Image 1 (cartoon, one colour):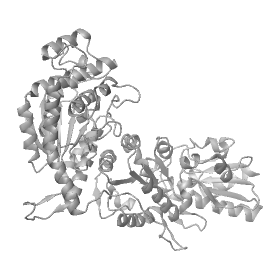
Image 2 (image 1 turned 45 degrees about the horizontal axis):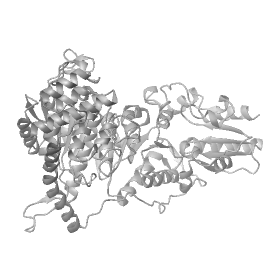
Image 3 (image 1 turned 30 degrees about the horizontal axis):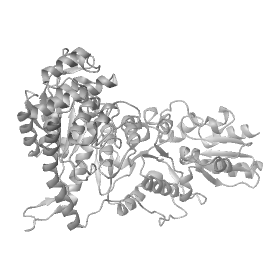
Image 4 (image 1 turned 90 degrees about the vertical axis):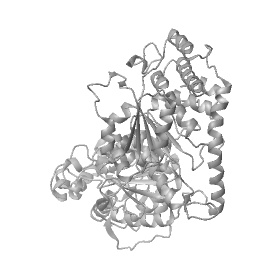
Length: 633
């Protein structure tokens, strides 16, 4: 029966790819015994409660193998046959790569190689945190010491995942943290899209992972279900994370097996016919052996139901309820004479958030002493920005509000993970400090220019650049209560508390912080440039009687989402508008009549003291003031 189920998974996957006219049949044929063994013999999941909190997680890091996963999920009862027939079609439950929130049974959106494996490390960290937090002391009623949470995180990856650098960063941290609830099944077939991996990827993977403090197991024949089963059982009893290298033949059974021809293109009709004959599966499209399907789903449900019922029983005993991410920071007040770096202020606010939000977790890429983001529930990611972003996604997928911090200029390292945060709509907060060229002597490699616009260009990503302590509070209230991915961009230089800023106005994206009596022009600015803009506006009024409105715009995209009436009440048409921001001009063009009204930075910085750099880059108070006087004359 094991073999019949595996073969039916294979042919369903091949039929899906054939009907869609695109897909990746190679992994369907090579890894079907792996995924079958995992689900039939080990995975604890509930078809009727797909987001059960103590379920085992499965991450298809090799996301191009989605047809394999969907066929398995159908056989398990998560999907219908009609869903399989709509593979890769608009609005189907079976998109080209797995998408979290679209398909029951899919625990993460995957496709960019390495991301799934790295995010699984975050899921495993979350599992360990929950296991410790909800430990149940030994009692006669239960008979043994245990925890409300004790799930495993399983990953199916391929050569491509392990070639990507992010996987090395993440597995290095997993080894250091001894995440023994993490088990990686490595579909090892020595073929990638362009051909044989020999001469391109010759790593001794088992030795590499041993060096990373992982338990390693080799399964020499990936068709032997008993050997795969035994390896997974051994991994579950290890005190380290485990990599199981399973040697397979890409496209096993196809005319083009063991070649890259079977990697990313559908099989031809003759090949499919011969394959089904070989596998003893009926030739009709989307044939299902119902006895095999019932056997498979029964194996999963009978084992999982015991654990599911125990979880519900223990939840009642412990009075456990899922954490709701909602906070109110309106009680926070600041000394009117406050003048400090926004990164420092933010660190204090974060400690208050942690007090109110038990599932608040995160850390920095070895920069917490600089970003000031240390909390009790802290993760030291080490110098691993790539992995940090993906791990945050794994934590957020496990009902944590996760954050990670580094310098703004290094946000480029996190972009692939940030894109997935936005795609999955996860409550991840990316905290970026040192947001301007005024950091000075570290020079152009550390001075952000194009990073702000890069972050703002990500759909579904809220980017906040607050002007002072009150705007930081407003940013966090919006971030936590809206459960969306966000960036919080903060200065290193000291900023004064402005009496006209308002935490509650941050939700509108932009608002007036210096009101005029008779409007001559409007200055829009963000972050620490708001204080500079007010100072310039005050000078112009005192010296030239030019009355300038100053608008703080901590979140440009939120402002642009407001009604046209609101937007024009803040930035009125028919008057000159000037933008001041220490970053690229892109995206601001729609606010001004011509580029000469954009006082921005569009070239790389230089090394020197803060004052020298600002002067050299024509971004000092005096030079900006002279530019504005010239514009308004």
